[in-house]
Image 1 (tube, rainbow, N blue to C red):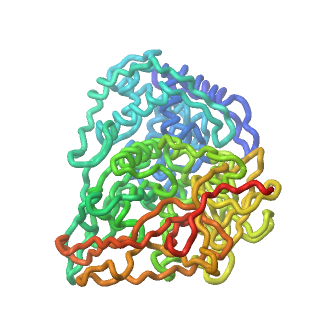
Image 2 (image 1 turned 45 degrees about the vertical axis):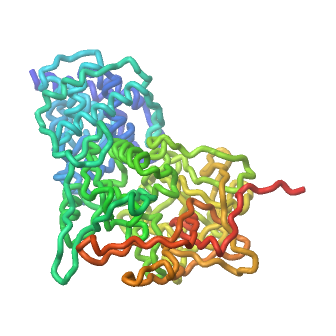
Image 3 (image 1 turned 180 degrees about the horizontal axis):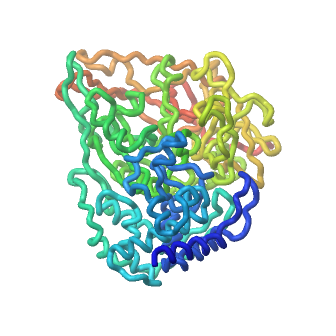
Length: 620
């Protein structure tokens, strides 16, 4: 009987699937929407369930046939780590808790696993077959009611624990209730009408089998599955210690920032690294496949994650399983949603504004000294969808002013905005087309003009289009002072120079905004820029070494303006010993403004600048 069904499935899908087409060619019939409808009908899965599961996995995208870091392919994220490894992709079998789901789907459909991961519509059919099989294994009959599929959806997550499986299912049914609509990365219009009346049978999760993880003590919002996997705090030979500092934040220091990282490694490897007392640390790690969260360092304590001690002392670091560019350059919707829920919880708890002055990428953290700038990390990179992330944070980037607001907020149409990058696989070789949150910055309003230079990253030589070189990039959510407009081009002040980016009216890459800016005080040729906001020497007690206030290699020339993200007094956390009783928080009176200087933030002393409203007055 199974052979007959497999042959029938193969015959059915052959009618569904388009012929292979060249990259960039127009889609051919049938549509992705029709593929979901036909696959759901074939396996008796409610089409709303199939659409919502796929949305949480990939937002219905094909991702050019490239795997996620957990070796998941296509709209249904069918996992095939064996193929990913054979192709030299950066995916690890241990990273995919669901196992080889492409093999299971192949057994159920009669299609080859290669076709299931290569062809998006076959991939959808494989996902439907898996959901139907999970429903059968749970002893639940086929039902047209989406509410009857909660257990199968939870099982589809591949989660190792029931808590994460329930969170995944909850998010899927949230998508069903709210609905969704978008154009996929390969050009298909797909929509899921809202069904607010659906109330899933959550008790079905009791049939799943996987136990709960040890979540006691983890600082997480309700309904988000978290576990406590502590990083070691211990003494090491040579009177050193690792891998974080004990503190008592926010009583001793206000937490100002949340820093978004990607792991550049699999989830399992990342956990091994953070458990090494001689390595560095971060507060949370989020798994790609199912959004599972592990906490390693208490939020009151200081993790060693950003490469800037001042930022470390005032931030929480979150690692996301993934790679900036290699192999799986896409991040799953489950991970985005899990991360956004965690960040909303942390931001509310510690009164952190949800904007790009406080929610930083690792690539936005400044170097502390001139010698450190070139070596600063560049993750999560241009493929992290900041616009979608802030929509999930419930703070989307929208215009807040007219054309004379004086600021612009970068906001690309991520899916359709596919600028050129090189170096994903080999240096100088073009990366596959991919949505991006960043715009390139030129010295003149022309695509042929050179990119602006970043003297901190390269003392000599030009900026490049390399995916790891952000010396001439501005990214979604970042705000800059408007300098000029010319046709389809907009100029901003950036790294002490005029920088132009393409911003056509019919496909804008920025919106108007208003706020505060700084400019050098009259009589100053240029204002120094700093990578940290340290106190004045007089603020230090006798038993704490004074930290010199040393500017970076950058400055703000007279006449330029830079947007202000926050104001802060100088502060330094002194911690050089294992015993926290020896630690000190030094607080000064020197006032600093944090500015958006280039791709990274920076600091200027209030005494060196004038603080002004950004709004541009209309000429008389």
